[in-house]
Image (cartoon, rainbow, N blue to C red; front, side, top):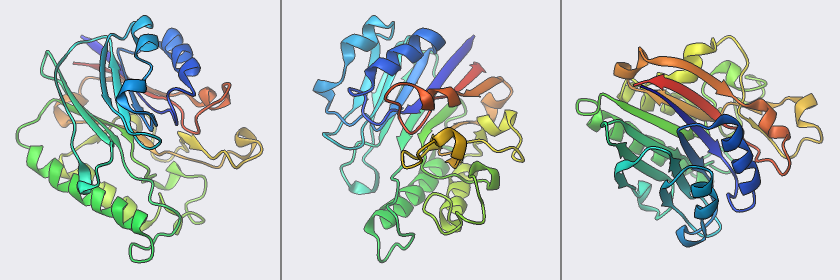
Length: 265
């Protein structure tokens, strides 16, 4: 069976439900993972998602900040959420489908502006979150062989995941301490980067463009912050990925665009 999973930092699901509906109508993934929904569970636009054909909803909301959700055509067997770094932030959801496939949806902290964990508590929080993810991956490595992890990782790990490797080495999201830590997270469970499986690391690829640019498309100063990883046992079923750059130009866009994976499971 083939399954298509999309991940998208929507930057307020209630504000942007129109483009969510547009995306679902056009692309019809089996599962949509959202980050930064910026709403409590009770205010999540359930009706719109159900009417779009996604009756199975898992939500970890938070007023005004953070929040993740999973909308699915496929039923969940279980739903779990973890409190990372004991901060009480809604940054994670885990669902297991009826065939046993496991899916984790993460919104890793952005980390603020100063890449100094002493001077900047937000950056310290981010590094602690990533270190917890390393331990999490090591614990699950032996037991979870059919797993997928997606989300806004807020790290652009490779040289061509950013518009300028040299200029962004001291900018949060591409500093060596972050990229090295994300590499440790990936190695802890032998995760396969599904998108770079199809797009060579030598090619520029972005999923985020700042709102600050007067013309984001012309400037093209992007970063690849949104990721889909699979366990090695699933890597043989990788069919295709897409990064929907055009969504950055939609009405009232998020600064992130959807990233999609089709996988034979």
